[in-house]
Image: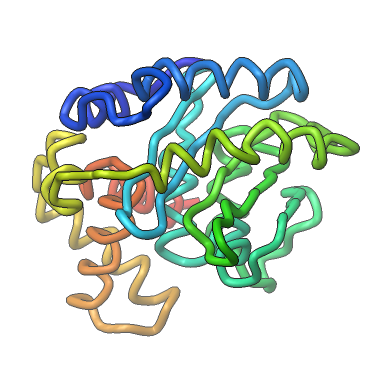
Amino acid sequence: MEPISETVRAIEELGPFVAEGELLEVLGDLSRQVEAVAPRCVGMSVSSREYGVTFTFVASALQVAFLDAVQFLDGGPCVESVERGEVVGYRVERATDEQSWALFARTASATGVASTLTLPLVRSGAIEGTVNLYGSTADAFDGRHERLAGVFETSAQRLVTNADLSFSTRQLAEAAPQLLEAESMLDQSATVVAALQRVDATTARDRIRTAARRAGISPTQLAEALVILGQR
C-alpha cells in the first residue's frame, strides 16, 4: 500500500515526530505488516481522536479517504469503535438500507470495499484514535483480528499520541488537501445530507466540512462523492 497524496503533503507539513523514524516510513512499515497478515487489505488509515488528523495508505486508486469522511459525517465502524473502545468488524454484504450506517454501506459498495476492521488505539484506558482497515473481500480479516491488533499494539499508539505535536490541528488539516471551495457542489451535497440527517442546509454544510477535514480531504472532494451517491 502507498500513501495518498494528501497524506504525503500532511506529513511534509508535520515533519518527523516519531522517535524511531520519520512518520511516513513508520506508516509504510505498518502497512507492509498489515498486507503480510491480510493480503486482501486494500486500504489503511490511522486517525488521531485528539488532533483530528487522518493518515491514509491504499493499494490502488481506492478512495479510502472518502470512506473515512463518510463515517465522520454519518457514522460507521470507526465511530463505533471509538465509542465502545472495542474492535469492530463489518461486512458490506450484510448491510441494508434501513440499518444505521446506510450511507457508509453505499459508499463502501461503490468503492469496491467488502469488509472493514476497526481497531481502537487505547492508552492508559483512554481511546486515543483508531486504525481503519478496508478489505476487497468479505472475509479479508476473518481469523486475523488478534494478529492485526498485535501489529498496531504499540506502534500506532505512538503515531497518534507521541507527542509534541506543535502544530494547529485546523491549520494542518486544512493545509493537507488544497481546499478549493466549490459552493454550488457543496450546496448540492448539503441537500443530500440535510435530507438524510433531517437538518437544515447550513448545518449539513458544516458537517460536510468537518468530516472532510478530519479525513484529510477537501470539502469539494467529499461533496462530489456525496452528490454521486445521492443520484444512485
